[in-house]
Length: 275
Image (spheres, rainbow, N blue to C red):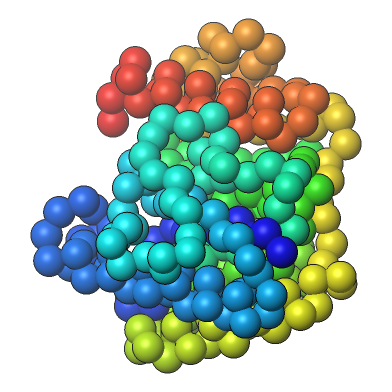
C-alpha cells in the first residue's frame, strides 16, 4: 500500500502563534520538531496497517520545515518550492490513500487557530464550484484527480467540524480546541502523536469505505482577495475573469490545471505588488 502525506504546520498540537510558523527563532524550532513527530506518528500507524511506501510533502510556507534527519527512515520527502501542485506535489495515481497532518481552518473562520487559506496575506476566500473551501478540501480534490482518497485529517476542532460536514467519511484527529486565532486548548505533543498513530492505522483499515473526491470539468475556481490590486493582477492570466473588485474566476479542465493557475495568481500578487 502506497501513502501520500501532506504536512502543514498551523494544525500541529501546541502551535498557536505566528512565532511558531515563521522560519526563525526558538518557537519555530520547537514547532518543527512537533511537526516532524506528528508526521512520524502517521507513518508508523500507517505501516501498522500495511503501508509499504510513504511519500511526505512538506506543505507549510516555503515548504522546507520538516527535519529530514528526524523523519522516519522509510519515508521519502518532497521539500522546497516552487512546485506545480503546491501542497500536493508528489502525488500521482499510484497512491492508495492520502493523509493531511497539521491542517487548519479556512480564511474567514471566526475561531480557527491561525486560520487562512494558502496565503493568508492575500486571500479572503477560495471557492470550488461556488463552495468555499479549506486547504484540505482543495487538496482532497487534487488527490481525487488522481483517484486517491483522503483517509485522515489532523488539526484543530474548527477544521474537524468542517471536514465532518463536507467529507464525513474521513478519519479525523483533533489536536487542539480553538479559543481564538492565537490560543487553544491543546493535546500535549506526545498525546497528539499517539492519537494520530491510532487514527492512521484505523483509517487505512477501512480504506475501502473512503470516497474519492473527483470534480468534473469544467471546474469553476474563484479566488477572492483581501485587496483589489491582487484581483487586478490575477485577472491578467489568460482565461481568468474578474468578477468583482476583489474576485477572479477561472474555469479549468481539472485540478492540476487549477493548481497551476492558482500558483500563477499567487506569484502575480506577491511578486508584482509585494505585501
